[in-house]
Image (cartoon, rainbow, N blue to C red; front, side):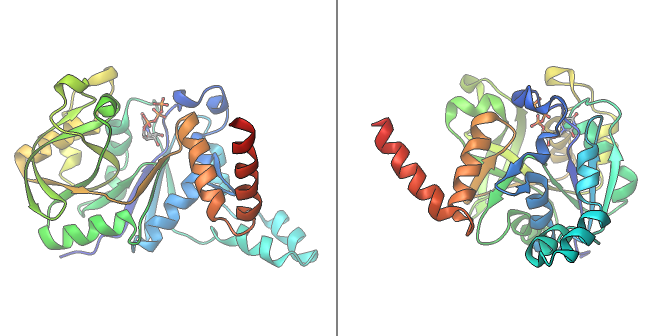
Length: 291
Ligand code: UTP
């Protein structure tokens, strides 16, 4: 079985849930304490054995390209001032195999993934959404790769969400749990109303797919919101072959909406050596004032 080495990170969406901030700034570049969310996703990819990453960008997303480029002037400046720690942090993203591709119009996640066809070629690959952070002992992308190495089939990450939130996600209709946390799926439904949702297991931002998804995407008509929906293409892939759902039991942070981003920064801040003590004290003092 071929090792999975390629990942794509779709980051071409408009980020309307975070307006007006996202008018000129890509939401994937919003900071999580001191790193943009998309850098943490690249770190998860590398920790999972991925060697080649394609980031799908669109209009107004140049800051993402610049972030993964070297910045010689800044590096020389930090070096001359002996700011070694800062220099190290700036150089962390240099020299990675990161490529960029433009999605001409934000026509949906399915359309964004389709633009990656020639980058991916024939091998299975991973999709990592640019605003969805997951933390667990084993990175979620690695969990999906491990599962693929057992089954040889496409596998999506899912997570239990509150029933009333099912309308925000693609949701699975599970047929049976074939092993601990691994589901056979009858069908996939994009953003069902809670009363129609077949389960509370929602698709989250990591997918491992075989390359036959591209032919299916070519023939997928616009669905919900008049966008090419990846979930619809995955439902077809599941009918032609098999797509498993792997239940993620770690923590998920959606940095693409206002509350999710605040929550992410508080929780990552509480673990960050430079600010954790100060932040903890601040939260305690603030809680007393709010009582
Ligand atoms: P989202 O639905 O979370 O992103 O898509 P969005 O459309 O930017 O955000 P809202 O809903 O308007 O606030 C998940 C991921 O897919 C990418 C987004 O950039 C995000 O990382 N995406 C979405 C694309 O690359 N292209 C698209 O056409 C749509």
